[in-house]
Length: 113
Length: 113
Image 1 (spheres, each protein chain N blue to C red):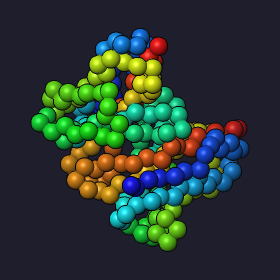
Image 2: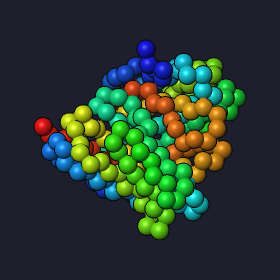
Image 3: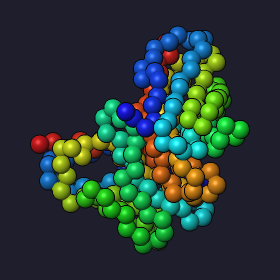
């Protein structure tokens, strides 16, 4: 079945460092891809998405490009802040009738001042 | 006030007890979901509902039941709780259409002793 694999955390960075969190997927069709973020004590919220190959999703300085050839959707940010400390989840959906999402295991990011 | 509200936020109970987690939403969405979050496993879908007459099992429905009392209310029950049901539970909603965007509550942490 469809699945998502994320790099294990925690990822610890200093403020203003460059961030990459790797995500690869396995899917039989042509899924849409998402990054969700979970701040401490909160529920998940959508960070960005891409619905077809070569699309780039972006929000709050984060970017991810849908790479069909490598089945990847890596999350990047050029300069992280302490406020970016959170758990990041990669997810996919076939956008079928159920609107169900399949989530990766999550990557904890800790940004130090 | 939160658009998706879960109660209780924290609960400690004993093996064999019946537990109900409640979810209510003010977003007017038809679709509601219950997910379970475990460290290292990400989020897994327990049940989902598209309206009050439509209830569907997710990937890990064994040991759980749900009730959709109204468009705005979706409850998750553990008839006889066991320790491996200790987890963080999230309710989520989505509008009609297949955007892949879910709106999450803040979670209910359940501990079964």
